[in-house]
Image (cartoon, rainbow, N blue to C red):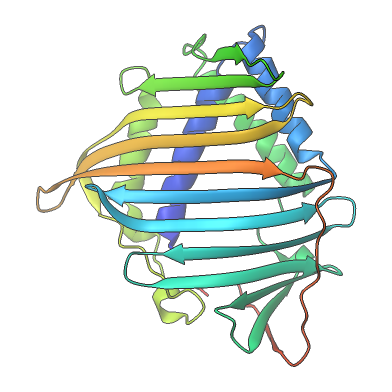
Length: 285
C-alpha cells in the first residue's frame, strides 16, 4: 500500500483516537470505550470484517475489503483481502501458522513468506507497548480541552452505542498543522512500490499544498453485552488545494465488525506445490 497514504491514515488515525482519549477519566463514555478496546484485544478468537473507502472529489480512488480470522491462544490467523484503485484490483490470501506469515497474491503459484518475529509491525513488542502508552499520554495532554464530546446510548438488547463527532472548529489546533505538514512533505516519503510486482495497486493521492483542513471527524462504536467493541465506524473529511490551485475534498470511511468471538475456526493454508518466496520488507517491496 502507498506509504504516503499510510502516513495520512496513520496521522489522522492518531488524531481521531486522541480525540477519544481526550475525554476525562471520570466520563462514562471514555471508560466504557477504553475498557472495551482492551477486552477486544484479549478475545481468544475473532472474525473481523473490515472495509475502507477513500474518495477524492466524490471519485473513488481506493478501496479495501478484508476478512481476517485470528486466534490469540494458538497464535494463528487467516484472511482474505481485495484492494482496488478504480483501474486495477488485486486479491490476497494470508495466513499465520507455525510462527510464519504466508501471503498469496491473485492465486499465483508462489507464496510470499516471512517469520513473524521479523515483521516490522510487531505491535506486541515491549517497545511498541511503551510507544502506545507514550502516545496515549501525549494525545491526552494535547487534547485535554476537548472533553464531554462522547455520547452513550443504551440499546434494548444490552449493547451500548458510543458516538463522537468533531467539526473543524472543535478539532485540536495541532490536528490541521500536522496534517498540513504531512501533505506538504509527502514527497519526502518516497514510495517505490510501483517497482514491485507484489504492490501493483497504486494510489494516486493528490499532493495537497495549501489550505489543508480537517473538516470533520466521526467515530461510532457498538459495545457488546460482554463489553468488547462489536462494531466501529470512522469517517473524516479533509480539504485542500494542490500546486495548481485545484481544490480537493478527500473523504475517508472505515468500517469494522467482529463476529464469531471466541469461536472462530482457522483453516491453515495448503502450501502443496506452491513456490515459497521470502518477502523482503523495505525499499517499497
